[in-house]
Length: 213
Image 1 (cartoon, rainbow, N blue to C red):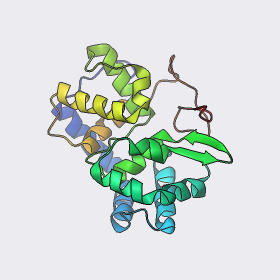
Image 2: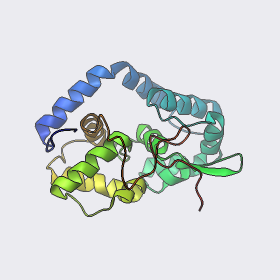
Image 3: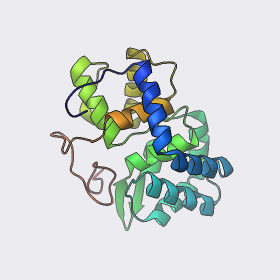
Image 4: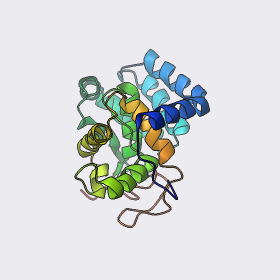
């Protein structure tokens, strides 16, 4: 999406899914098997395996993986119930992790982890998706939202739902829409004028430092 805007339609989504599946077949199969074998978060060993796999294969660039895994396991009853119910508020619970006394927001990682637990209810956020949605919003104003709304998961879920409805893509799952947005949003914009900067240990590009509240 660097020179022209390609308006989403069924043909383009199908094509993107075919391309994504071809290029990422082994990664997707490995994650599918891992989450299928270990669907709950009651065993800390399995949680750590899933956290490491998501971080490595989806390049979320989070740190303190054992701390993140312990955080998910500590709240596993609440997290498992909310993920099964498709409750979007649980993403923030997964994302906000205290590391050495500081609270970090691993938002993109949390959306990916949630998506693999329940792909029908949790679309993925990352920089590619952000770039594609925000660019299309400028072009055809498919929903009412501001850029920072993409970083609030309940609002992001509504934006994704509105995106799918506006473009006549209700026959596609969030997983399929994710694949389209990921490919259409790459390469991502070098910088977002109203967004934070990239930083190791955050996620993709937002936020860069610990949360203040």
